[in-house]
Length: 302
Ligand SMILES: [Zn+2]
Image (cartoon, rainbow, N blue to C red):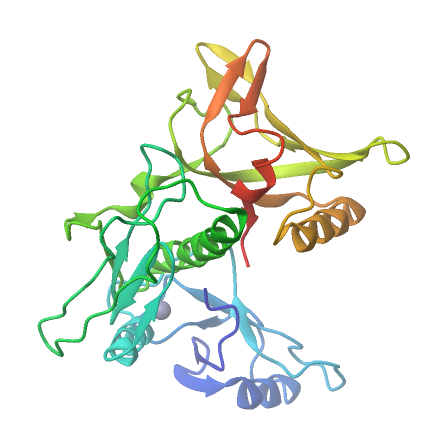
């Protein structure tokens, strides 16, 4: 996910500018619109905005940021091609995926909905360099301890970043552990208004949520509600989950509790990710996890 861009193509001057140069031209009023930038000359689908446009005084140096949500780079985008080339010869090994160049092998057990490691460590042998990357060895598909779950969720959050980067136009290819190319979006399900939810189907669900802290004095818990009601067996139901703070004491959880506390204070909606499935207890649509483990399977985009 590229949040800031050092350079952009000015559609007013028809040339590439650094953020410093563009800012200086904005102060001199040679440029007139903070939004008249795009990623590169051949990428008109990805608009950029210059911060501090026309301002002489500022705290943070001017930079380019995406001009809107859900934009994607054009197939000819030179930046995406450059990023692709820069990844050649690089690799990244994580618990549930390994990347070499721009090829990513994903090892998620959707059937069990558990973050289980491979029986045989995932290896990938690229034809060009003959380098092999493997997983840290694990004990087959036994249930994971909280340490492993913590590491796997961290890895899952990284995979989510790669997924959204690819949706934005990064030139990645995804494979399953048998080297068959996969469409990673099949693993994801966005929960929007009246989205049909299939009970007990494991996926990476995500959507905008609100969070509330309840019962602060006595056994406090977080109550999280998706903003949009979903559909299950022809019923319209809003998925909700409660997180008991007293039960959340294991590794990796403290930081999440602090994040959730901050999100409660800001009262802003945010995107929640959940790896698992749902169960329908009329009239509720609940996360199909025990009270103790639920927090492990929730994460936020970094
Ligand atoms: Zn682009």
